Image (tube, rainbow, N blue to C red; front, side, top):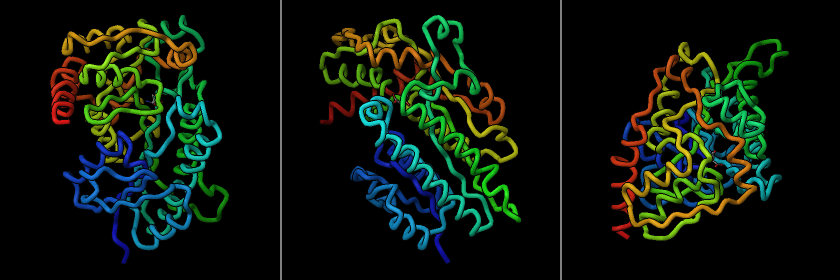
Length: 338
Ligand code: AKB
């Protein structure tokens, strides 16, 4: 018999590291991580860590020959700024990588006659508002509005959401017998902020970069205008939402794709929060027009009422608690220890 496992791709990334730490303390099922980058020392010993490419078919076949995959957290992706520099590579990793894992999950669901849960993080990048007036008038965007992304990453996420829905509802719809289909659940995240890791390759990175630079007493030039506004959430709430959605009974998951968020800040409000705790921080604004345009197309805030209604989502950290209780104490400790 194969051993039941949870598979986490992209486990060395920001969400992955936080998710692994949380999962190992909560569940007994073994966790297999798969990432092209090595897993940080601290968590390496708590999981079965595979270093490799999600596109490596032989590696995935070996994996399923040995283990019964129960749940997949497919976190591996190239983020928005990086994807603009290498759109084809982004498509390869973000779309073809996801398709490969959806195929694996579909096959496994049939083998064990039980749906594999496929948990997929999407993003505010799946939205694209055409101009600042529209952005101002659609303050809290709902899941079905403005699905017109202007980045390769946003297009990839939106399409993979649709692929996930296809695999969970219509896969092999012309076959004589309806197959056991996977259970696809997806969250659209705002900009995420971790106290322990710094993002790379994203366009919402200016928030965490401001804070982490301030804590290291390094000056920081923010690459967007002061007035630009997007939603944010801290990493413990991102992990909480992933686990809540995973564990929600199927009957309460009325949709495949849900917005989740916590607070919305303009870049100057973000700077003011940083200055409250690091009053000597030197933060200036030197907008990069092109990256700015990407952030301008993202919603100022998300409407996450469907998640709240269907599976009781609510964040633990509002902006005050995020800075005062999670971000600042942990960031201070981390850089003091270095
Ligand atoms: C990015 O900036 O690309 C990501 C995102 C908003 O999904 N942080």
